Image 1 (cartoon, rainbow, N blue to C red):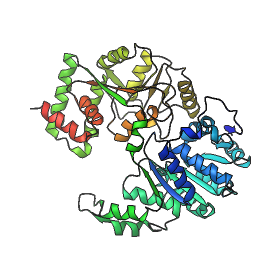
Image 2: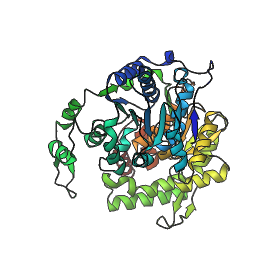
Image 3: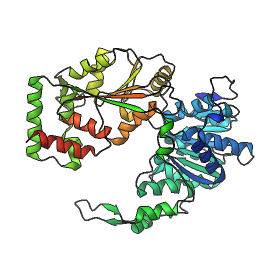
Image 4: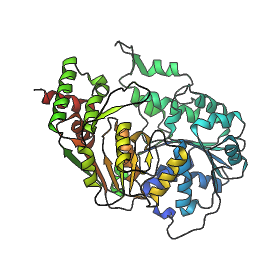
Length: 463
């Protein structure tokens, strides 16, 4: 068992229930009053503490005995225990984290506690091992992890779903109705949208005659599906809490390419235009342009060991200037080559990304939130749903701006969330002037289509 919290000594630094916002209190009431609920709260809205409070009150009322929380691994380790420590009104409840070896996970279930947190990858293991005896409350944090109704974890969950008296699923981005189907079935077993995916698909989708014969939503399907689940859905509009979060100060930092590298960049852009860049694969086709903008070019991208040629240091010099203030900063990177160059300049800097163990990630996050790290690197895909980084600083720099809207928003939401004491969150975008790099950053800042912006930028420069 990696962590067990029983009673926690109170301190004036802890937050009280009085610190919760009205929309959170409304969300707590909604979960408390519904046996099945699907709160839709965007990133940074505080849905974790809302769910924990509601289920704690259900335990107090004698409605529930024990609650199972299923969450992504890093969220299981770092977020849920921290929430119970941070909020004074949650101190009366004990929570065990069932992550680690099989023995550690089993011990977490066997020791008496109000809440047990397990990660999605081990959910089927716990069900098969009969460890859920006595649990009658269920919280599915980031319920999109069970949107695939045919996955092993989803099928295993369906077998034990009837034992839970109260179930809630937390998400900030429900996505299309295909994803919604799997999430809702993970709560109600198929009562609202049907038990069979093929039947649901035939009712709400049609087959589109393109080269892949893809399924597309029928015109009125989304509204019809949302009506079917309106009795369990609690929607918190961003406007209800946006003004309670610190504003974002976004700053583009434009740098120029050296003349020889600019010539190389132009030639590659011409090559892509000649071959025809299609919006559907623009992200892949422009990868080399992004590499050049970052200061390198892979020489054997398909090889087991990636190798590259260094081309320029413009972005790294701009980064050094932004870090001169000495304020704690998270730097987001895209490519492994970029990370290796960063580590060469700033040796020993912790980072969250591929190749880092859970233990190392856990320690890096804790050190960051304790204010011990002036600098940390992070790949946007490792920002993680629900990961709390707001205690360590309020500055984020995109050394490479991601194509994905989610990978752009997730890192920002790690800092811009409840508990961020700074008055503002500063987000810098270091990008090459007149390049695909600049187009991506501009599109993300303005919340426009990245693909359209990139294509328009390339076409404009080729005129």
